[in-house]
Length: 312
Image (cartoon, rainbow, N blue to C red; front, side):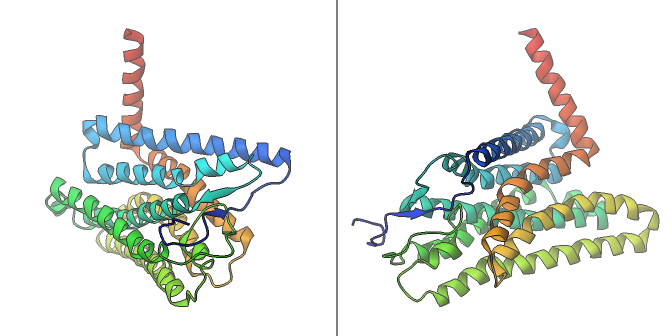
């Protein structure tokens, strides 16, 4: 067959989430509502930051990029997941499987770097307030965002170039509801131990190391604030708790999916749901409900939209 890697497998079988019709309708409602919330919530944040000049600062520019990534990450799997709920034969073509894996890791890699940049932004704002505008100037902010995208693409390509050339000639059941490097590699008709280690190191160990680095960084910021002024500690903790919550929600599933040596289908599905469905819809709520400037800007934008409708 004329495949990219001359393999015999032309499609992969995905895992169904429900057998009964009642559960299928429940999951359809559940995922549809969450996906609409993901689209509306993240789009509203992006539009608010774009159109409100009061939010044209590094913190909110990074937040808008995080919303774009959350929307993109969810869109790599959730639409396909909804589509497959009522199909008897849940298959995905070889090429679509490869594309899905590539974009999952591009968006995941970009988000990982963005969370590091956001932590650095908060460190500069809290620990070096007098130098904040000099350090986090618009040029530096854009360079960091571009760097996040370059690193994300590099992270995905470093695994993709090996996987797409693997020989697939036998089993094609992925064992989950989406394609991902660790699952697909196991289906190759060759010894993939070395490649599995590369994927674990590239996605798992880096995720774990970055997670602990970010947690230590936030603790260091709080300790620094406490040394200078104990009165500002509660304010700093309130600000950083939103960032820490997002970090835990993003990295905990990644660490389990790529590092945990004893994966089970039930836990694998649970953490995948958290990663692709729950986290992208919670991030807008976490950042907007705990941020006064964002809430004011959203009300201002909503009022402008209502006024424009009344005029027409």
